[in-house]
Amino acid sequence: MQPIIDKAAVSRLVAELGSPRAASSFVSRFADLLDERILTIERAFRSPDPDQWRDAAQGLRLAAAKAGAARLQATAAQLLDPEAQDARSALALIGHLRSDARVFTLAHSAMCEEDALAERLAARRPA
Image (cartoon, rainbow, N blue to C red; front, side, top):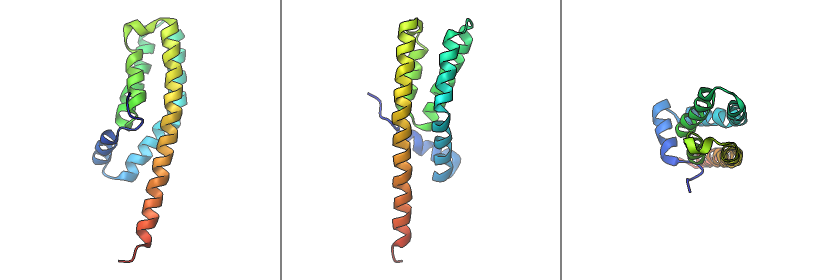
């Protein structure tokens, strides 16, 4: 099973953006948009255009990889598997995406609170 948050991906994001705060802001925005992205995937599945489905799932997979959302990335990758594109498999995977999104959002929130607490404690230490 994939980790909830891929710390190596988050470290790469920090290096790419130049600061932990910028990376945290990116991941927070990603988490805020998860429900909308999953709804887009669900709507695209019902669309007659298979490119909509593929584009929506691929977009989530790439954004999840950048944000360190390893489980979401893996589930989105499964959606791209041609065998998973029947109605039963796709709907089950979309359900997994919703569950993964809730867990990721909670884990990210807890990580932000932990970081804020660490910053406050560091600020209180005598020099």
